[in-house]
Length: 565
Image (cartoon, rainbow, N blue to C red; front, side, top):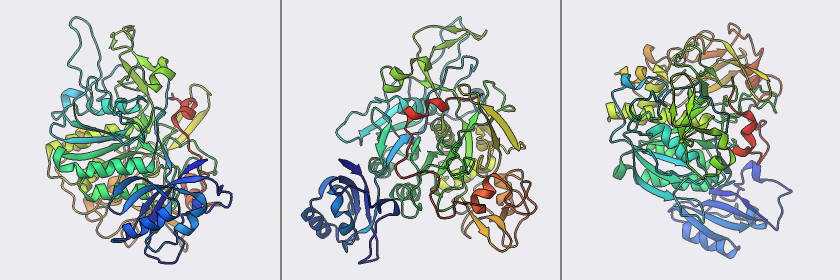
């Protein structure tokens, strides 16, 4: 039996550094575990020797002070006491954040669904976007300037699953145009001029590990200057098992951000998860709980060109994040029944041939059958590349913007919602889901290409997402940001401005933090939904109640969630 685990190492000598989810008395001592070991500076070689003596086998070096090992589970506790070890946490499985749904031939638009193409004068030329996914099979795409696989034992960089190609098509799909004489709608990415960096981390089943993703992020950082990598797109995730401060996956995202790279991640598809009686709140996936990252939720375009009838998708994961209570998602983008490039013969293509979409759509709504050149998927995996592409347009317009400024501009210019609730119906089960539009479901609003490109503001400070904090005395929840954060630094960047008055309710506290739920809030004092999540009965404060250890939902198990009406 072999389990996958991550070993990191702390400054507290003589103290066990095992993460809470590894302190399992039922862990079979005969099992072997894959671990990522991070050493204190200058102690890697000595600690490596001690690990080897305990039967550890090195699998991959991630950095000078971090490597992947396979060790006997019986040695896990003793290894965590090694003086060169900083901390120990699991090398969790990660999965793509998308699933299949029935074709929607009524939706006859190119992928640039936030704004029609003639309104956008930029195409991302010169900007490098690293796609950390299941690989890319080159087809109707812009330039792919670099390819590498981090899937153990599989050096192929092609997309055997079919997810990475779909995401890359949303970013950089590039079909020259329709045949003459027929009214065609064709797939075109939002930023077809970008240079794609293909970093494959998911296997043919859409599954991978933290360690593979961390290695890919490290490579993107190393290649940043060579390929002008300004953006990392990560349409994958897994449950939150601990604070982002100690989570190695989240820390890799933070490192990329500090290196000047915008990291865009999917929020996750667990917004209907009520296993902890939270009405789907506190289901944000890791590393979407990382404050620096741009975490993206999902919107349904309802098959129309107008944005007026678009609505939040009920399966889009909601915040605040477990453990740290970071306000997520940061914004939302189209993600329901998204048409993009098809990877013929991939796992998804073979499992769900009904998702193949013909290359051409006639103006009367019928299709021209030509073998299904494109493919349709739903999920926050489709929303993330929308935002990555718009970030590329922003950086082409103004290459001097840093990662924090890109995030701040995207959030402030996002369309604000006046809606309080909408209802969506699962087409398979017929179940109706009510979505409430608050700071933990739609973030700062709906991605707006034209609004972002029209902005000339250069905000100052960090753009870390604020944390939701609870005042025990006044029984109110606040969004709290540090003094160096852009939110609240000026009147034009105040929390209530960026998130919108209908999303952040209540008065403004004397120290500048916005009340999210309080006595004057529209929901009342912890009366329902996210208010109860934060401080109601069975609140999540400091506890991981939503997912049990290892209870991940890969793509194949989410087919039933499908698209929605």
